[in-house]
Amino acid sequence: MFQLYLRQFLLLIMVALSAGVRAQHNVPGKRPNILFIFTDDQRRVGTFLSPDLLKTPVLDSLAHSGISFQNSYIMGGTSGAVCAPSRGSMFTGRSVFEMRGNYGQVIPDSLILLPQYLKANGYYTWMTGKWHNEYAPFVRSFSGGASIFFSGMGPQYAFRVNDFRADGQYTQGNSRPAPEGVHATDLFADEAIRFLESYKEDDPFFAYVAFKTPHDPRTVALAFQHLYDPATTKLPPNFLPEHPFDNGDLRIRDEQLAAFPRDSTEIRKHIADYYAMITHIDQRIGDILNVLKRKGLDKNTLVIFASDNGLAVGQHGLMGKQNLYEHSVGVPLIFSGPGVWPHQSGKALTYLTDIFPTLCNYLGLPVPAKEQMMGESLLPALQGKVFSGRTSQYYIYANYQRALRKGPYKLIEYLVKGTRHTQLFNLDTDPWETRDIAGAKNMQPVIRQLRAEMQRWHQRTHDPMPVFYGTAVSK
Image (cartoon, rainbow, N blue to C red; front, side, top):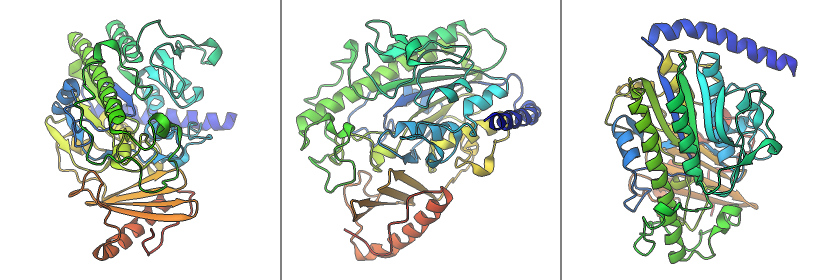
């Protein structure tokens, strides 16, 4: 264990020394601050995935001032707790298969995290909100913090948090109750505001504000409870009473949040509450950005907004994120700030893993262990240059769902209790994934090509699941 830490320490020192020279050469003046705002279970903002008039004026403005990637995804999850491996993958730039633990919550000691790397390169790293990846990677990543929520989920009122500890000795025993009567969204926003108000250090900061909403329980704060009327809330075009076949997790916890079969009235209430929680977050992000502007920090602060995964909330007869449809693997990804060309809508296929190498390039830092990273730099897109990105992407869920997107097509393969199922969608003509064209004769060559590409990704990501799809279409 000592040798492992020693190797990691020496690697960080060598990278930091070489990075210091490059950063000074590529980034003139004081290095920019980074404000990374992250939400929990939020689908893409401002796209077809929000059929109602979802009120997010702050996020809309943020996207308009920079670049919003319209085809941003997570790789998926190795268990029902999709957010844990998704977060670990994002912070390391690596495949979800490199995360460990019984549900992918453990980030191995050998992997360098983004805040850990920035900390080694002179950044003051600070966090408030949800951290879902064990104590050890948090300790090596952050210089400070407030009201840290180490659990995976919990109530929006009356939950427990930890204060930052310089000794790194975190336990459930030294947690404390969150302030009585304060909604989780407000607690973390207020902590971020206090941090920005009081920050006077010379070092640039990396501030990670990780809301634990709109994840259930969908307990809406009083001021937002009547913002969306369930009676007039539209059902999405892909609403179904039940999923058409067994996808492997039809009765997981998330799916039991609504009755079977799905009742349209109940789903409208879930959607209304989901939207209300997102609008609440949006307002509080506005408060944070206002402080940034009032203190004059906005001119030298890169703002990033993203979420750990999406959510079905009634689409395809599902409630959770334990699937590979667009509503669950598609996530928002916005960059805004100095050096980011405004008024952009990026079309390239992107992953959250791209954030790490993008920030390295943005700051003039070498990308650590670049050859092992799944993430790719998006810097050309941020700068307004022509950027095509990947030609395909791979998505996974547990041991029984695999998917690939290439061009307009998305192929999803299932193996559940020995039964195969194949779906194919044309996202250009069917963005809601309502028309499965896998059985069409003229689609068989397309399916074969997509399966071949899927197998290449399978090998590249070291997917431990045996390849279970062949050349024939199974139903």
